[in-house]
Image (cartoon, rainbow, N blue to C red; front, side, top):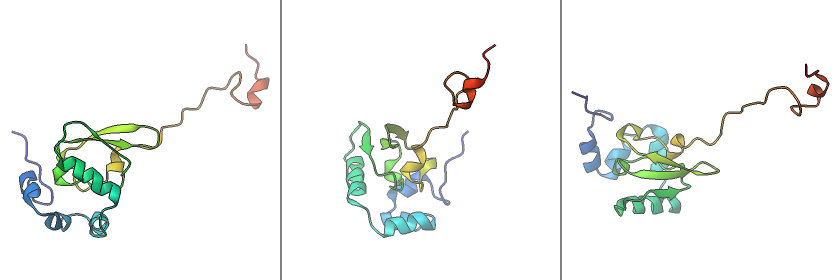
Length: 127
């Protein structure tokens, strides 16, 4: 039997039935401060789209939006700087930012030395 998920001692059902202020009091200080300062227009629009119960994914550039209990089960496409990355929200993501799940950089893969790799490799004999 799988364990039930708890966030700060509360089940997902308890979290979804809480008011926004009660949930904010459970968050870590950085997220709590971010939400107490108020939502930007872009963040407010994303929350309204989530609350409208549409089944299609929501595209957003708001990487600084804190994941709330009402977002669980939704798919949000978060902009990574070059493309939109699908982020399926589950209960373990509560209290994190959307941007944490949409990586902005790619690992660098350097080429092997040889023809055209650099100016110094011009003089390496090619067998």
